[in-house]
Structures are given as structure tokens and as C-alpha cells.
Length: 334
Ligand SMILES: O=C(O)C(=O)CO
Image 1 (tube, rainbow, N blue to C red):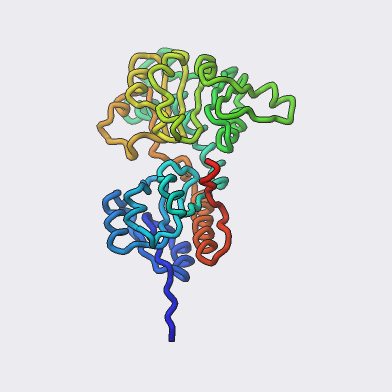
Image 2 (cartoon, rainbow, N blue to C red; image 1 turned 30 degrees about the horizontal axis):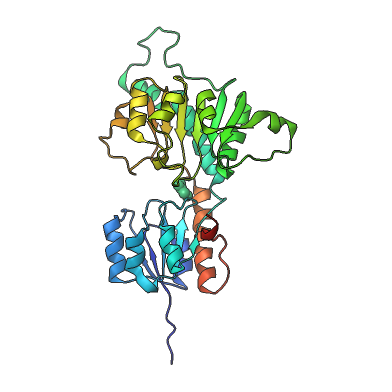
């Protein structure tokens, strides 16, 4: 009797049991079945001990050349539990011909919801206001401007990267009686309706910085966008501007941001992403009242995470049965 060799799959994070059950039917699994996060070193040593044919991993796991080389020729496919891919060494994958599955589309709405939550939390000083309730400061000021925030009404919104997520954020902001939306990026978008043609304006990055009351980062992290928000960029922003980053921490120079927030170069910032993640609890940004930081929860709603997991499972099952993946990253087109 010949025994069928099952492909070996390493899952670097804890997944709901229904997805593990589906994968177990086909794969020989090595997976993290407790919530503790694996460090890069732990990921490497597990791969070295038992090289997998595929790895399933979230945006927090760095799949660099070292990891890919550790798996060696056995590695046939990568399954990213994310829409972002800056944590994967694409050059190495291309060189070795390793295809990458990912999860676009299903986290657009939840990420846009998170962006609005973060924008409002930052502009209305929610963390600061909640602290006053706990520490007895509530009711200690008669100032009519106590705990006031920056209004959205009549504001100019600047969106850096009007892709799927950027546009979903823009649509959610429209009912807040904003005045206009400026956007920058690789290309101008075509809008059908006259209303949109009036609302949206494609501008250079510098003009966006100069004109916007709220600047929202929704672009991918790449060589062009890394540290794009640096000292020079903050100097071009309005002193009253609020910066929101729901994309990737590496787009912002955090030292320059700290200075800009501390010196009143800009009014406030809301970050869902930082460098590193998690941000150390003694990081200077955490000492600032005008900086609201979320723990990278952009896609953290139950529906989106289930959809992402299902796409990953389907990508894996399809690939190992010789079918096209549901969503394969087109590395050659990047
Ligand atoms: O999917 C991604 O790229 C994320 O950052 C999830 O929040």
C-alpha cells in the first residue's frame, strides 16, 4: 500500500478551530494553538526543525529572506492573512518562484470603519476625555471650551492613497458635511458623477499637506512612501492639522512626528500602525496627550477576520489541488 504524503503547513498564529479542521483534512499541520505570539527567532527555529511546504501568517510576521531560505526548496507557497505585503520579501519569492496568496477586499470596510473611529477619537480627544472621568477631573473646569475638539464640518480632508480603503474612508466622511477631499497618489481617479467630480481633487503631495485639515494615510508602504511623513512634510502641514495613519507605521518618521506634535507643528495624530509593533510602552509618543494610538486593529472585526481566514484556507486548498488561488498577489505587476 502506498501512503500519500500530505503537504506540510506551518501556521504562525492562532486560528479559529473551524479553519484548522478544514486545513487538517489536507495538510500535515504545525500550528500555534495558543495565543502567545511567536517571535521571528521562534518562527525561524520551527521552520528549520521541520521545513514546511507552505506558511500561513499574519501581517505581524516578517517573512524575510532568512525565513524563506530556512524553508528552502520545500517551500511551495506563502499564504498571507493580510491585504498588505510589505512584511514579505517579494524579491526572494520572485527569485524562487514562490506564489503568494493574500486577502484583498474583505477588510476594506472594517479598515475604513477603524479609520473613522480613530479620526473621531483623535479629533474629539476621546482617550483624554475618558481619563478625566476616571481621575475625577470631570467637573473641575467651568471653561466652555473644556475638552473641545476639532470639527469635521467644512473641513478639507487629504487622503494619501485613494485606493479601495482610501475611497471607503472618503465615502464614510461625506455625511459629516466636509467641504472637499484632496487626494494624492500614483494616478488620478475617474469619477462618474458631477457631485464626485466637485468633491474630489487630485493634487500633488505638497498641496495636500498645505491645504488639508485632516490628513489620512491610506497608501501602501514601499520604497517611495517609506518615511514620506518626515520633518519637511510636517513643516508643510497646517499647525491645526490632524494626521491619521491606518496604513503602515513605516510611512511616518516617528521621531519627526514626536517633534511635530510636541512643538505644535501639527495639532494631533491618530495611529493604528507604528514601528515597531507592538510599540514599547516607554515609547516617547505614548507620553503625548495629542497622540492617540490603537494596537493595529484596522481589520479587527469578527466578520472581516472570518472572511480573511476563509480566503487563506481556499488559497491553500486551491493551490495544493492545482487550481488557481482565490487571490494571488501579482508580484510581477508590482
Ligand atoms: O491586512 C493587513 O494588511 C492588515 O494590516 C490587517 O490589519
